[in-house]
Amino acid sequence: MTSGDELAEALAAGYPELAEVAAAAPDPVYLVGGAVRDLLLGRGRADIDLVVEGDPGDLAAALGAEILESHSRFGTFKLALGAATCGRDEVLDVASARRESYVRPGALPTVEPGAPIRTDLARRDFTVNAMAVALAEPRELIDPYDGQADLEAGVLRVIHAGSFVDDPTRAIRAARYAARFGFGVEPGTRELLQATDLGTVTPERRGAELRKLAEEASAVRALELLAGWGLIEPREGGESFALARDVDRLMAAPPWSEEADRAESILAAALGPWAGEDRLAKVSPATPSEGVRLARGHDPIELVLARAAGARWLDDWLRWREVSLEITGADLTAAGLTGPAVGEALERALTAKLDGKAPTRADELRQALEPPR
Ligand code: ATP
Image: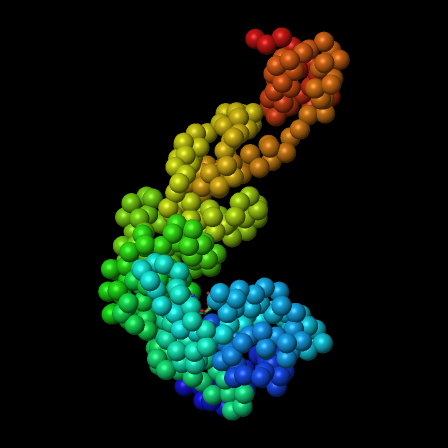
């Protein structure tokens, strides 16, 4: 177990700029959430989330910090701590300690600022995320739900039984953390997860949380957990996400990592909406020009999915698509072509060039002007 002294030392070493914040703060201020969790895990720096028992505006003024964003309804601020204070530009998320309540399942919370830190911790998702460290000496850990013990045991546990009813996006967060840290889920929390209704939140909020999940290195494992709890339906049926796993592998390195967004591709492979990759994976173009025609018009994500599903010819297509003509439409109009005939002639020339039949500019022009057979 990390002692109070060890934690204070880790905090001082990991976040030296917070000493300045502590010295200037007119009200009690705490480091909360993921940064505390990651300090206890020995994982190094994370985003800085601070909670003040007071007005974050007063803290900003006392620090002389630039306010990058402020949302008065939620009492949250994004501050830039200038290089003069901490040696580099640092962004802090600062919120006033608040009480939250939910008017109906899945609604955005009603926020009442001006609560004590422990009340603020009570609104959080999991015990391991519901810890705080006071920035003022002696910098003690505030851990009302035994999050430190859960961290050491590798267990994810909600703080209260209504947690996923209030905010079902926490179920997606649960999968994200369980997969990222290799944590187990406490049995009571698992039962609550299995009873969660993701349908009470808007598709936008659900999508945003899934997107965060998909950005993680352990995305596919997290999706499997969600499917195991019955909260998502794999596009392929069952609980496995074989195609998503293949996409993940394919996109670990160039060239395919550069073709599309990894997170979106994994989600598409796992949950849809695309389903056309099989068609592209089953064909095998006889010539480069046929490959270029087959791939044309497909979204990059579809092509990534097709390649992951076995369309090896798409590796060659990455080269084929770079082939371009030296001649232009102007050359063809000069030669007397007009209207759609120009496009058709260019297409003929490109086909010939792709298939090795027009190595020179003169060959391109000849192929373009050759009457169609
Ligand atoms: P990471 O950024 O490493 O994924 P984090 O804990 O910093 O983890 P954030 O999404 O930045 O994650 O949230 C910060 C903190 O806010 C969390 O640690 C948690 O205490 C709280 N929190 C965030 N979202 C929710 C939520 N939907 N319900 C309850 N508490 C939440």
